[in-house]
Amino acid sequence: MQRMRVHLVQFAAAWICLGMGVAWGQSNVTARDWVTLAQRGLYAPAQQTLARIPDDERRLLALRAYLRAGNTLPERWSWSAEQIAVYPNSAEGRRATAELQAVAGAFAHDNPGYELRINLQPRSLERQLQHWNTNASVATTAHALAASLAQQWAGRTPDAAALRQALIQWTPPQAAALAAPGLSPHGQARAFDFEVVQDGHVIAADDYASAHQRWDRAGWTMRLHAAVAQVGPDLSGPLAIPYEPWHYAYRR
Image (cartoon, rainbow, N blue to C red):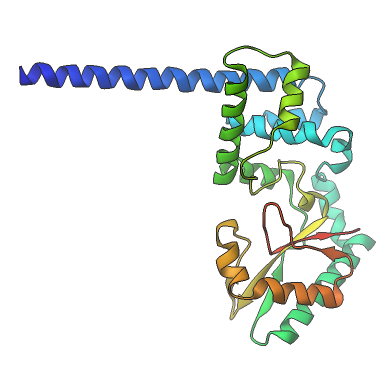
């Protein structure tokens, strides 16, 4: 009898797992179908980028960002490798470098023993994709989007216009920590990230999870802002949503 009970429990568990697998599979297929439907006519580089996002839900979240960009999508799209290569020696690149170095100098002067580390290189589309495909906050927000759409239509297939409108209007419970690949302002040197360094060690990094502890509570948020206010006329920030005290927009 005991053996029969064990077999029954194992049989029930197997059915539960199978049911969960089917439901999850259907969810993935639905998200994939939504992407296929809503991306028609989209800016070609954006469609190509979507194809490089292996997870259906992350792909759907990126598509939402592309649709929300509307007609501005081409002009906001990240630079090519060739554009990134010529940027440092361009007049624009030299101007940005000079201003960022002035900020670093002011910060070091006001905070003896500490310095700023700044990544002056525009962020490539390849790097943006790598981050998007692995970032935990992106996965959380993407899952919330897919669940919201599944609840809204409950297995029914909307027409393309209705789906696009739903994607554009959806408000996430919490913003993902990254811009969709291709739309990061870092991709056109429109934003720069700072890190605080002491004796060669980063003590305040561009880490979303430690923003309040390592930046706000330690005082680096205000100290960086003070340095920018002194000598960074083309910089504005920090970024409010998602909150990134190390991230400053750059007006070209």
